[in-house]
Amino acid sequence: MKNFRNLLIAKVESLKNFIKGNEEICSLLRQEINFNEAEKRKDRFLNDVELGRLKQLLEDIRPTDVVLKNLWLFENNYRSFKMDYHISFEERHAHILNLRKKGILDVYQAKGMEGLGKLCNMVESPKEVGQTLGEMKTLEINDWLCKSLVNGAIPPEVIYGYFRVLNFKQDKSFIQLIEKIENVDKRILLLANVGYNGQIAKYISSFAVEFQNKYWSNVNVWSCENTEVEMVVKKLNSVGRFRNSFELIYGNGTKMLVSDELMLDSVIQLLHGSKDGMPEPFEFVKILTYLDKSDSPIVKENIMMVELLFYNYIRHDVNLRHFQLFYGILHNPSTMLELIKLAWLPDNEQAKEIRKNEFAKNKNLSSIAKIALEILHGLEAQPCENNNGVVNGQDLKKYAKELLEAAKSEYLERPAMYVIGKLLGNINLGEDYPPPYLGEILEELDKDEIDDEYRRQLFNRHGFTCRAYNEGGTIERKREKKFLSYAEKTRFTYDRISIVFEKLASEYHHMGDREDVNAKLEDLDN
Image (tube, rainbow, N blue to C red):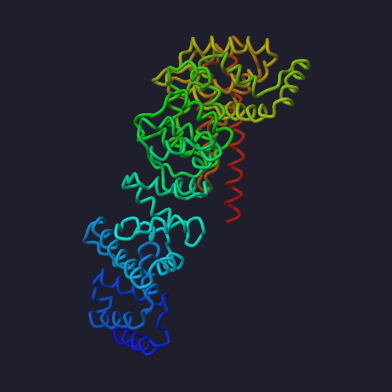
């Protein structure tokens, strides 16, 4: 391997007159030298003699032009600089900055502003040139930069980087420098790319609304003072940048930095779309959870509808049953009825036509109805349960009766029976199952539709079944046995629920027979 490396280096050395001035090859050589110097693993990497030859080769083929010679200092990702892991990031950054300052100074001393302009237009990362110029106090380049932005002589990233450094250093003179740019559009764009600070925001507020909107549509707002957050959020909301405004609202995750009313307004406006994308789900859930417990009358009035509209965005990221909307539909029959009214058309023809006309006038109602139906169809929580997960039987009986009675007056008895049966099927299958109140509810309501939906929900709770090869109907036999025991337990007390369990046991019996036959057929095939 060592001989091969020497032959390869010798071959490249023989071609140095041909490759002289090729910056791409110089960059590759520089990376190879830095990589080997950083690692120092003799079994795999170049030894000192080979490294010396590569360094000499790099020196021999480097461009002679002072601009071309310093282009490598401004490549992306620092890839041509030595990666020294034994010094801190601050020390490494200072070292690179000094190298870049020296490179810019060499170009300026040799070719003046013309050379600097050529460097800015040829480098891979113009922003780095601008940031380096911002760190240099020895060059009088402010007027040149401002003129270059207007006439397009150099990439705008150079100017943005330069003034960004001045802004970071809180150099108050930079606004006076920027005012020299007569083109207001370019001045606003430059201020936006500099990044947010209170001084710039105050300066921008003196412009016409058109220019203010342009600034707030483009400015990078990484952070701001806590006292400024509310103002900045309002400005970002006004131009549709809700992702950025939610980052500021969320703050450090422990304290919300704006009023509850503004937070709610931001959430509602998000329904119309965001120009910079949706906020992170964890931020949004945190904010919605905070609003759910707000004491503000305005928030209390609107929070349930907001939770409904954002159901699909938050459904996988939070325990929904603790939200006001879901607590309401599981404990309050009037809230559940409102959701049913959104999801289903009434059975009465006159009421149905009125509802259809409402849908025709307001296209958003169709989307809301779809969300309401998804919530009811996917509802898997227990109704009327306390914080310990225990269902209050008396409350559940009252809930079911009131919901069914109220639904009759709205011509929504059929969907109400579907919902009641589904909720009863969500009761946990504990050791004392079925609890007496379940049988009492089915007997008192005396509706076959509720019994059927209750049976379907019990069946669907088992979900997808996986079984071993040639296992047959073992799983179904266990379930048949379980439901037969439930039927025996309720046979002489609650007839309706006993019949439900017998039907389920019968279904599992037939399914078990079918799986036994399938297992025998599989055995014959093999």
